[in-house]
Length: 104
Image (cartoon, rainbow, N blue to C red; front, side, top):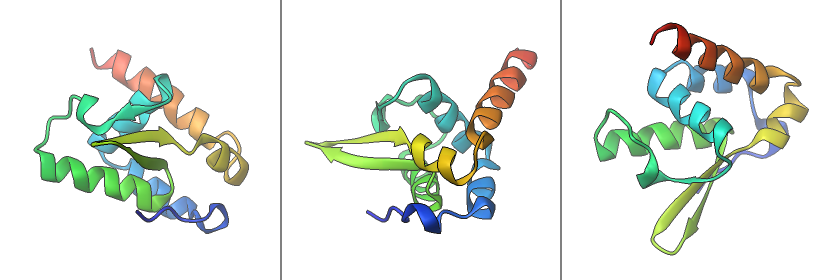
């Protein structure tokens, strides 16, 4: 699994990865719960498309994935993102949550 080193995380790559409602939903869920297995997300896409969304987030440096038995566990790379782009992730999570509440 490819996880970019902290110094290689690009703001452009992170913003591009977050510019998709499914991926933003994954990040928002991980903002509320520190670790979630892939199969626990209720995503509106098929399995192969979900895998692609997780891969995009992982390769951009937004999430970290680790295998635990037959499960793949996801977590936000919050410490790394906070060091690289102070306040960015908090802003994204706050705005995504506010937008979600406004559309209900």
